[in-house]
Length: 140
Image (cartoon, rainbow, N blue to C red; front, side, top):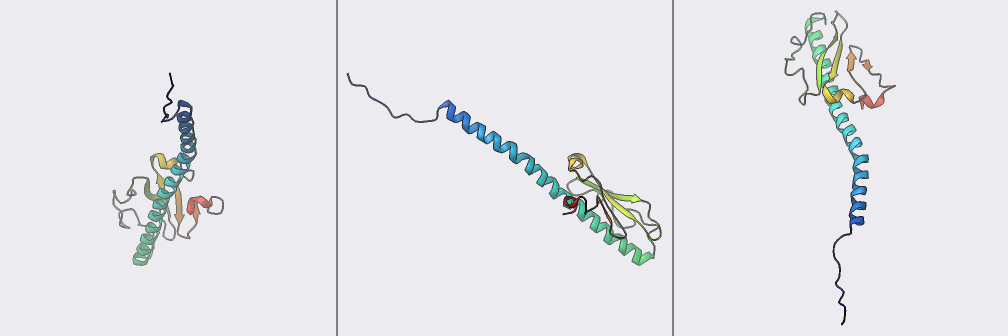
């Protein structure tokens, strides 16, 4: 009687477990990096809202020679346009504008609030918080 050996195909359980472990390790490294890049992308949306708000305030000042009576509606924002398109930031005044000063802010909503930068502000001089010198990633 002669034994025939068949060629085996497929994976052993050990090989499959090793492959699953490698994929799990890669996912554990990649997912946090991915979410931080997504939050960074949304942050640029908040920065764009601030830039738009500054331009609107300067136009308001050029037309009225004061910032004092400026409010969200006076500079052209509506209730829906004061929220970013992806609903990650809301635009508002940080302080009540005076004749020569204002401070605008965008406040993060939901998961975006955990991005490490928090509320972004800018005033009539261009001063920003958090300070770009101490938190450079917040304004990149």
